[in-house]
Image (cartoon, rainbow, N blue to C red; front, top):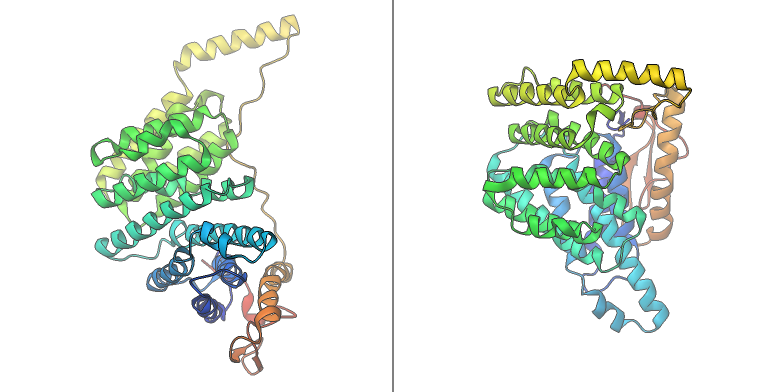
Length: 402
């Protein structure tokens, strides 16, 4: 569903949200403006047009400054006039940190494949963003994050594990630092020292150790979710990320008992990797063939003898009346592909948009100047204060081809 709907005013509203964030004081946190503004930007990721890389960088820089320049939580608590205000401040600070984490996930993890920029600029942005993520995770850990926050934090594992395979020493160092903080928040303490001392020469060993630990948690759904997330990197314009994603998938499959995984999920894995058989980089083509061969071996270890033993086992179960073995594990959720008509899809999108936009408008409409926005048909316009309120979706918000 992501990126299938066009909202012409998206960039205008994102710019407006950035201005709201800039207006927030850096020495205190007494309102949820920056929190709500970042949430709106994050939610708009599902709509076109996409935000260009330069705007993404500036957006991240603004949000970092707005949140990371706030005084330590201990100082904010001391400045509160009452214990109730101190408690409220802590909650607001925690929610703001979580909002920034979600925004970072949106702008860093979900970079569209069409964005290509020079290696030097990419590394500078990645080092800065990854270092900031490490700092954010350190702050989040102080609040003993709940299930929903931990769920968000899990999404950073794959991009960090892939980026740690970079050939830039500073990128590897930044990723190792962020992953160290990540293990503290999630509780994977046995990997903390591994990430803290990661170097260019041992990143594959670190990746394999992480995949082993991931599988050992026996959280099959988590493994499936992270594998699904890695599929997106197979389409990256950066060849090292495509190779890194193949390595992650292959090493995870190595640690899984692939013969116990459902055939449909095995096929999904093989098709994802197989999509790069004709990759323009020869080394990736070779990596694809090697990985697919290994996965086939994991799925069918000693295929002849296994097949005979399987037949013998089935005969025994039939004769003795014993129950057959449990069904094979599913890695991936079955996705129900809804075929709603266009009007129903528009209503869903606009129902989703109305609440954050109207909430911001109603609460802060006295703080900013009026801005013109075109709603609906191009010949119908209205001057609105703050963020626009929409009663029904405009004609432009229909699905567009990717």
